[in-house]
Figure 1: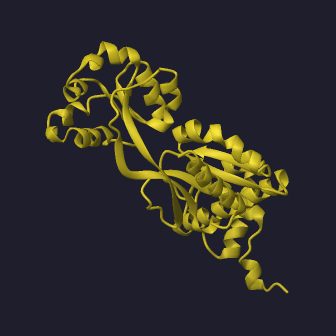
Figure 2 (figure 1 turned 45 degrees about the horizontal axis):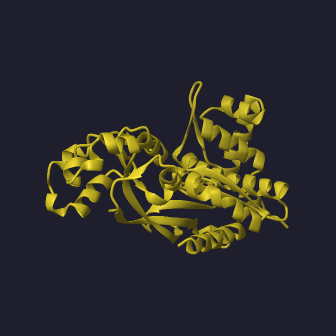
Figure 3 (figure 1 turned 60 degrees about the vertical axis):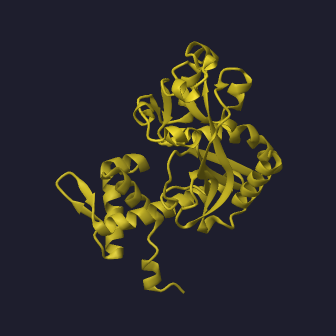
Length: 311
């Protein structure tokens, strides 16, 4: 038999949905529009929730609302809980005998490496449905409905397990036309020639060029390259930097395994074989509470086996 206390700890989903919508939108009116209800219905649901909890979740002003400190904490937890419920509902409705895998991927890694290989995973796991979202930076698993992520960096993600996948070796590349017209093709002093060229930078690898020069031209450590290397264009994504290099805008330092097609088509030329090796790597990151989720286990196993088979 349900006791009054335990019932109080389980507010109705209609109350929670109204609260979540109002917390996210910052408006009872916007929440009502999102849930196809009246503003009065939203107000009554939230008032009933506050009475059940004996806590004020919102501060009411004349025509505006704002979350109290308690409301902010509760909103974060309720949003995560409702996201899990929605995901579970979609999962059972669309794939009752399989599972859904929500995967966060790096844009270039996802489009250039993962997508061409993904049909193999789906053929081997036909009951698993994959949804993807592109992420350039780390995020909070507790706030986003993601089961695992592909991460580039170090093994330092809190409340999650990081499994190493592969290293990244970046090489300097440019278009064939740029290579010939810039004088790089005829150069007998690569450092002197390359440092004068426009160098294309990636925002997620801001010191890549500096590190590459230090590794390969140690005798020039501390030279003018430090300033000149910062004068080139900066890009947020590898794909745009790749297109910029193809267009002849300069020399880019790009991971060789991600530009395989451009190299094979002759759109890009490797200036020299010296590659940049860093302590960073690609990892599959799985939050602690998703370690035993079957689609995650299957994807990690397939990913690791695929990488090993291609070495």
